[in-house]
Structure formats: C-alpha cells, structure tokens
Length: 196
Image 1 (spheres, rainbow, N blue to C red):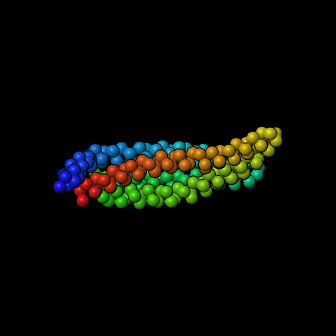
Image 2 (cartoon, rainbow, N blue to C red):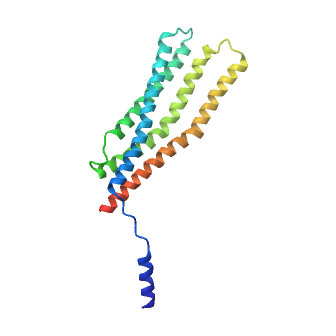
Image 3 (cartoon, rainbow, N blue to C red):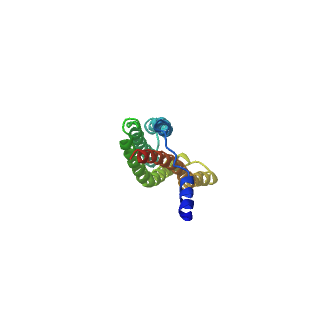
C-alpha cells in the first residue's frame, strides 16, 4: 500500500501538459507564415527586377558571339523558372487561412513542406548549375580582351560562388525555413490533439 501511495504521489506530482491557447497558436502560426510569405514576396520582387535587367541586356545589347547570347538566355530562362516556382509557393502559402479550418490548414502546410523539400532539393542544384554555366558562357566574349589573370580570377569567382551557395548558404537557408515550418506544424498538431 505504501508503494501505491508513493506511486500516486509521483504521478500526481508530474507537471500537466500545457494547454495551448487557440488564439495564441493561430496568431503565432499566422505570424510565422507571414514571415515566410514576406520573404518569398521580396524574393519575387528582386527576381522580377533582375529578370527585367537580364532581358534588357539580352535584347538591347549587341554581342558578336552567339555563345554570349546563349549564356544570357540560359540565365534568363533559369531565373524565370525559379521565379515561377517562387510565385507558386507564395500562392500556396497565401491562399489558406489558418482560422477558417485549422485541420485542413495543417494538412496543406504539411503538403507544402513535403513539396517544397522535394522540389527545392533537386531544383536548387539545377538552378545554381545553370546560372553558373550561363555566366561562364557570357564571360567568354565579355572577357575576350582581358588578361589571363583576370579571366582566371573571374572564373574562379564563379566556381567559388557556386561552391559557397551550394554547400554553405543553401543548407542554412532551407534549414531555417524548415525549422519554422516544423514549429508551426508542431503547434497545430498539439492544438489538434488537445481537442481530439
């Protein structure tokens, strides 16, 4: 009997799981999604500006070599692909409201996270590779009259940029976004379990 009383006192002494406030959770989730959509929005704005600049360079500057034009077109098409992907993700996050149907919103958020992880995983490498290839082709004519040291420096910079963005910047950027999404999904899951 003594063991039972001890077990009961230990069990009753356990901290109770915090009850989540629905308003607080939805407010935090909305704030987190707003942060991600704002980041996507400014990415879209920057990509539109850079794409317009690349289009102006492509169509209004005369280049002697078709390789240079091909390089710029590769960069332009790659940026348009990335822009369309970013706009799509922006619309996916912006079209749902967490307050209308939280369980449906939770499922759409989980689906968005899976899709984004899968697509960004392979697309990012293609994006960086095509941008680097386009710049390398573009610089063939642009650096035609430059010294060998300057050419080596320029191409080395492209390679260093490719390696930096691929192995240092990408993992940190997407890990940060992944953590934010996981936190929001976790809060919504806990909220759903609280009412089940």
